[in-house]
Length: 172
Picture 1 (cartoon, helix red, strand yellow):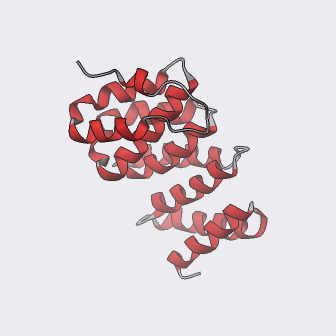
Picture 2 (tube, rainbow, N blue to C red):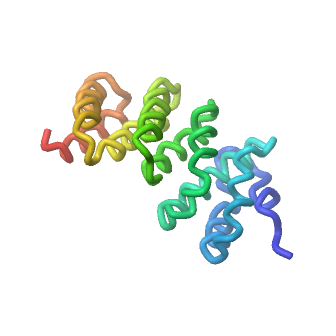
């Protein structure tokens, strides 16, 4: 019997991803194990939560379709978490979901709330995610361009650099 993901993701410290890459490889090889990994987002162990978010985000970059059955849970978890390590992974994942207009608005609100996080990484990834969400949505693009221009003036160095790069997508 395979080792449970919750055990594979334990131990070490917050600066380590532990065995999350092994979890990614196993899920990509055996996609039916993905629900077990999703459950780890609610673990009592902060490291397990953080590493499961890391693994899920990496998996979603290759197989975003695996997120679809868990769309409501992911939106809910993204909205409720205050942990920076989870937020930055959710910021990368949410734009990969096929969202209805109502879900897109909810994702936009979640990502906008991430802009108030203490973590520069969370803020920077939230900016990237808002740009990704705005693709093909003219009303959201106007808001995002304004956000990018403001971020170029007032953001952290990472936010300024990312915002300058992203503005080029809008020919600004």
